[in-house]
Length: 96
Image (cartoon, one colour):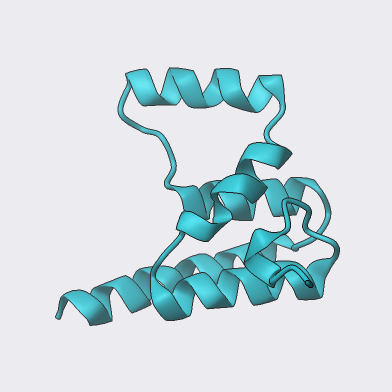
């Protein structure tokens, strides 16, 4: 049996990262990113997220995914900006 895109804990390349992000934007369900984000987090990331959680300034799962993909060289800053804006717009549209 082959794994689906959302089951892989590794983001292979830019195309894979874009597919994952666009699926989340389409469904507004970031839960499938959990194992991917967990696999990409370093101890430094975890410490930073803990500090952010205390101040209630922790980024959401989709934002974490974008940052980690940018740091890993899978997405550019421009990609992340566009995807982040698309996610916010999709959430606004659903709320309206």
